[in-house]
Image (cartoon, rainbow, N blue to C red; front, top):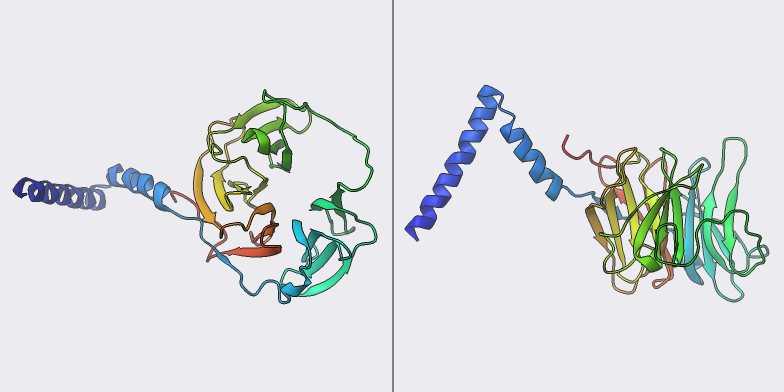
Length: 280
């Protein structure tokens, strides 16, 4: 027991020495030590916006998808079910605006591409006939092959990130040439990703895992390197919530999650500043 307390006292003396040495001598030792600790313990803090939407009774079906039109301050939600509105439109503050179902049968994904001059929303409708305009890969487990490619997003470097859900990985391609750039699978041993989106600053990917009811924040790699997947933080949702697809507001960083188990869309907003800068 005496040896234990001697070790504790020695460790405390060593840490005090580092602090004093760093303060008076400008040593980088403590700065590096602090960076290593903060990288492992820093959290990306989001809170659930319990007041969004103002009237959740408009969710009358299974909510499969959500997108944010940051230009016009609108949130579009696609839901499935019989004799219900398939598309719901809310403000970013949670007020219901309108709904329609006469052009959509079975919505699966939705994407807003509005500009200052034109309002545009794209919907993938698995209940309608469609024509394939571009196809990369085939069913399989090798590079550039897929098993339930469930979500896709683009980064500022022109890389296409595909949630290859059935193969428990994210694959990355060049958006212009279609060249396969690499894959991440070390973060998804339990379950594959169902949705991927970047934070507005491009530093992190937010990844949804359906059956785990989990959102993960993953460090984005630098240009020219894919490297290994590194999870920085997670948000564990309630059991059987089942986050299907998610969207990120490009202006505020708010995260909207379409939950097919809970049959609702929830909004998570960042605390304080939008996303912390690690190691700064």
